[in-house]
Image (cartoon, rainbow, N blue to C red):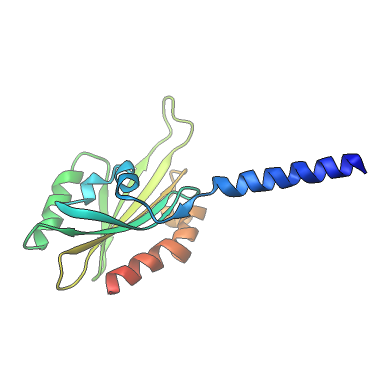
Length: 163
């Protein structure tokens, strides 16, 4: 009986420790800047975090830009991503999509695939940014992280763009 109680307590301690390791919530401006997405932050007047998940690297935030006209934002982003590995992978009427794949080489134990979506809210200077990263060289949409993004990240991004 004593052994069962010890095992139960050990399992409970493990469950509590594991649950507290998964962090999601609302990121601070400092956490957002830690993602090194500066290529997509153009003369911000302050970053506002909407969602972050550190278990599945994903992030949604928005900011107001000081740049006018807002079409200049796209020119600045495109200039900033030149020679960084980020490429524009199409867009639709509401956002532009950028991807970057970092292969496994040298000391790297795994490859990485990232996707950023950037939108400018109509008739405003508000920029919305969504980000997801997978530990894979496959396209985001072909990964478990991509499935998560389809369920959680991109719907939140879309709802912020539509506001």
